[in-house]
Image 1 (cartoon, rainbow, N blue to C red):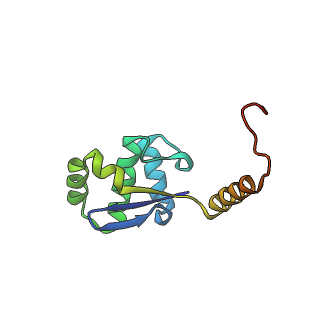
Image 2: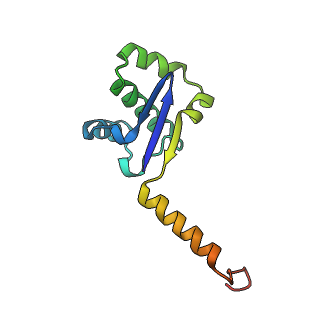
Amino acid sequence: MSWRIQLNGMDFSSDDFLLDDMEEIEKATGVPWSIANPLREARVARAFLAAALERSGRSEQEIVTTLRMLTLKKLRVAFEYLPDQNEATADAERNEAEEDDPLPLTSQDA
């Protein structure tokens, strides 16, 4: 699982975070990287954005200013969830199997 982060001309993938970045994000948020969701918790969003901006070469002052001025509207569009290839393949196979099922389950079948 990864996140595409787009903000103020930055286009960054969470897959490009270093292990050190993720450890800092975990320390700052108390949330393990494997379940961190920037659209669920503001502190995770802030930590992801700060790390992505830093890795993109932004100055510390620019990072602080960007985070202070960030609206919820901008936050919502800054993050895009990108499913893993395995996850996407499993979803596609599941959908295909459901389409091929001649007798789909109904509430009466349960």
